[in-house]
Length: 68
Image 1 (cartoon, one colour):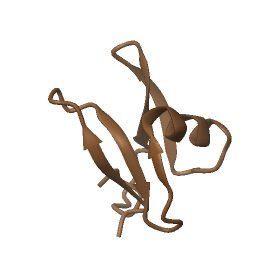
Image 2: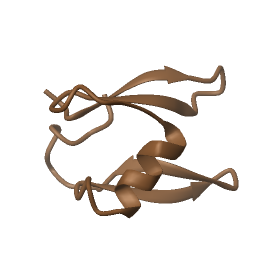
Image 3: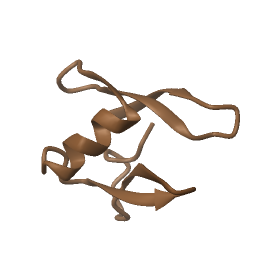
Image 4: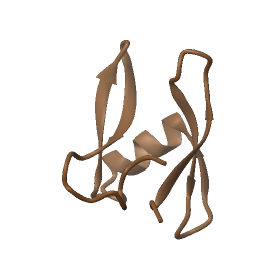
């Protein structure tokens, strides 16, 4: 099971809410970005997409860290 699940997105497909399946924590996009930047989610990174910091999984062969 993926650690992070997307729980809400806009009509254009931008992920706006996330759930950590390991801790049960729910986060907004901004909260998840802050957690990634703080080093709490090593398998994820932040990219600037559409002029907004956006959480993405780091490219690798594992499906367990993909945003589900």
